[in-house]
Length: 189
Image 1 (cartoon, rainbow, N blue to C red):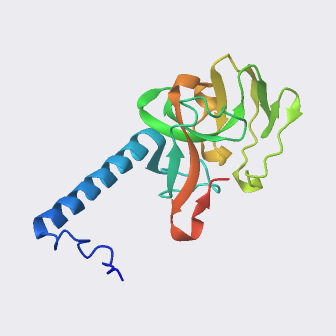
Image 2 (tube, rainbow, N blue to C red):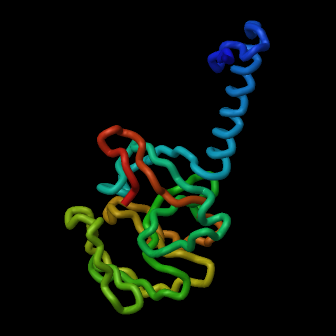
């Protein structure tokens, strides 16, 4: 007959000293902090939405995670409809979040609030009628390496209608997940 020692009860090495236990906790804490820093610096970054330009999809003071990894490593291409975060063309100290409307090579124009891409009107379920503006904008051919972006709240958005298409190098993330307030938790649509 053999004896069994429960796991964690010393397993034949005697009781653990408080200093060993503390060292184990500190090691685990430092490893957790290192992993969290890597995730936040290179993959997901929490940001706070400021302003109303993306209403109703995203509202002022909402908190979201952006994925900084997917575009940087080319794991995913920027697509029409993506909500991207980028350094503002007119002020590189500011960042904006907007929806991609035009891809490189597209011709985008707006006729009394209706957006056309390559001659086809976009179906924009995410823009409520009350948030549309009725302005018209001349056609713009999106240059290679640039993206035409608009806010969902068209009458309250500073976007490509003002400063033109955004250079690819200014785009540093994709909005992926709302984490605050609790009633809005879920993927960004």
